Length: 136
Image 1 (cartoon, rainbow, N blue to C red):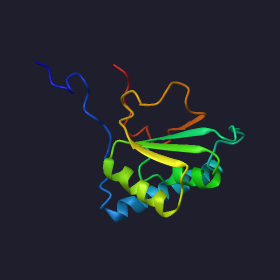
Image 2: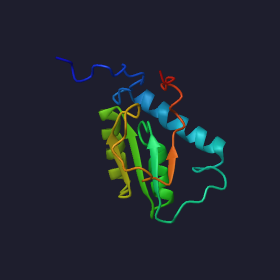
Image 3: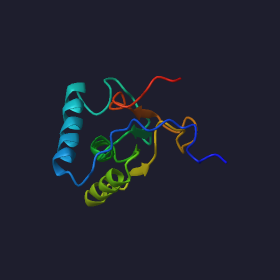
Image 4: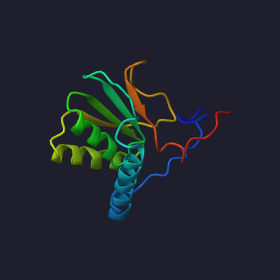
């Protein structure tokens, strides 16, 4: 009898403990610095439909997703991360900011995602290089 996770390689995600306030602050600052370095939330010249859908892979505490949701209130913004506690933190922050157009879900992006094909107009994946591994 095989185990449910048999054949699935172990996760290479580095999971942050949201109780570590300094690490959360570091992640939020990292998101701000990269956004500033890019010249804004979206790539230069990126045009999205007014009611577009955006996905943030490995969203961590959700800073980028919340900023997009705040800046573009007509869009639907989704953030996914493997850490249930980081997703809970992001949800709490979004609720405190009254952002109803941002949604956070626990998902392992190394596995197929629970979204329809072509569902998103833009996918942000700026912090995945740290744990992505070459396909076998």
